[in-house]
Length: 291
Image (cartoon, rainbow, N blue to C red; front, side):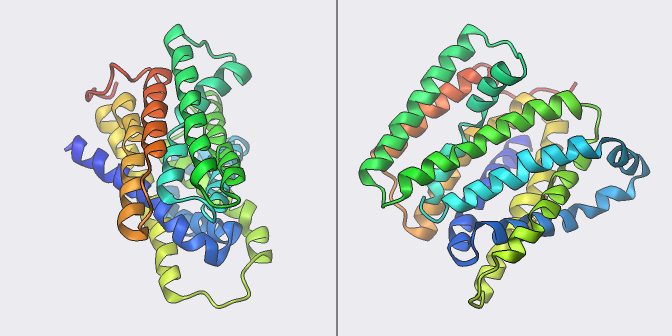
């Protein structure tokens, strides 16, 4: 059932912001993400049992390392750093701007064409970001405005990764890309994560949250996403973008008692409207057969 899988994936990825909020203040951003990507890489390691994938890894390791940095190490760390000041629901809304930045980065750095509809979507979506950040400046705690600006670099990085992978890794098995992005991110973050390891003991419950973040929200989520991609096509699978903020806000409200404010809802609605236009999905949200 594609709809069930789509909702499940959105619930899992929305939950990642909850776990970041619970773990980052205890572990710190870089140690937390070093653990996240290392554990996820170990879970996905069976991907390499396939000889063809091993050959692709040897052939494309440089491009896979770039994707590991831009699609995992950097954005995961930015979201974790922001989670020390921002709520789970708020970060999940900022994450939904990824298609906006993908369109902008594609036009500026990769020469991708931007249609009139996409241009309108960019303007609308960025207007939603302004509304959201302005509301945070009025109601958020000290440091939250700077954290929001920092976190916005994460979806920008995702936007770059989308175009870079499309150009350099189009023929690479997607499951290998999933594994390699975590594996190379783990190599990049091992030393800084160890150097910044907290001196205080880590409570057992936090270790449980780390495992959930790494295994469920990273490794399992990637497998679900690529399964959905293969079954119903890219347009339908990408519509998970519109559902993640719903679950991000819901989990933040239920488990962290985070407020869902009018500026958040308004900013989210405007951002998602712009995202639908910029991603070209406003008329493509029905299941399609994979070609």
